[in-house]
Image 1 (cartoon, rainbow, N blue to C red):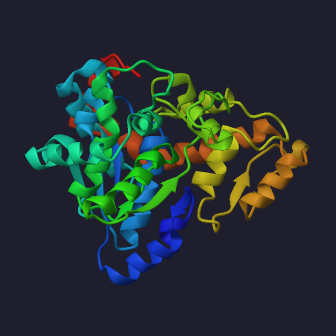
Image 2: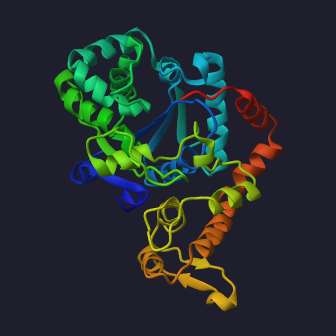
Image 3: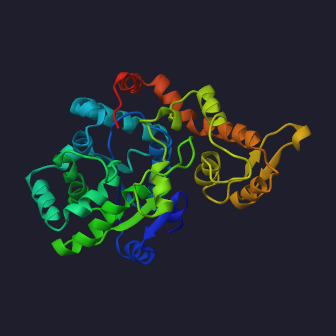
Length: 355
């Protein structure tokens, strides 16, 4: 329970169901799904790797679902299915380089499960979903209700619900932006003779531009989290997993980080990555004339110092950048040294990234 629910986990639906599942099933199945559609930033790369490791350490079988059909429906990478599948291979390299054990996970393409029974299930799920619910659930595909989309796009929510039951998933371990599809699965599953999957939703890292609202959700707090999340289609908002040390320093130096206000992307990196286990201390390096080195034993202690004005944003940024550089070093080296990984990266860098 501690491993599965620790940060960046933000919400569990429901804790009692999760406990019962762990008590009654020896090897539950969890999944997270991704549109393989471009370069991996620390939200999709690092956060995913951290949670996969948490769940596999807890004895859960984990499926990393590479949703090539979904990316194609959503017109990612210009709708080029072959390029989308190359992006799938690239994502495998990202996660393995960040500590995901390939012996403990299963990488699965959407096209591998999309047989006749799957498409029949998509239609059955759609029979229990109104057009309005499908439109409201389009946040799962990074779309707002205000956008005019092709009819094919509205198959996305019933496809995502069908993925869960086709792969016999017990735990939907996705970001907070995916909760609408998971709630639909919990509502529709029993109507079709299936189960209610447990939902373990993790926090979405804020993009470096800071908080904003775009109208993805009625709930204002959730809307800000989804609207402001790190995005590969806005490169200046994102730290990519294979960025060079200087690129990481430069991006974090330019990140939104007002003094005394902890609601910023740099503080989030401390809370959800660096100090997420509640046990790892964090040392801020700074010149002696500004107080010298200081170590915080908890995030709450660091946040108080920041809010009280006892920690300068630049000192925070410099120390966060150096820790993140070390965390991402294995990934950076992998993409420098592995021929296939390097070729896939170069292919995606030259491709047109579409939202």
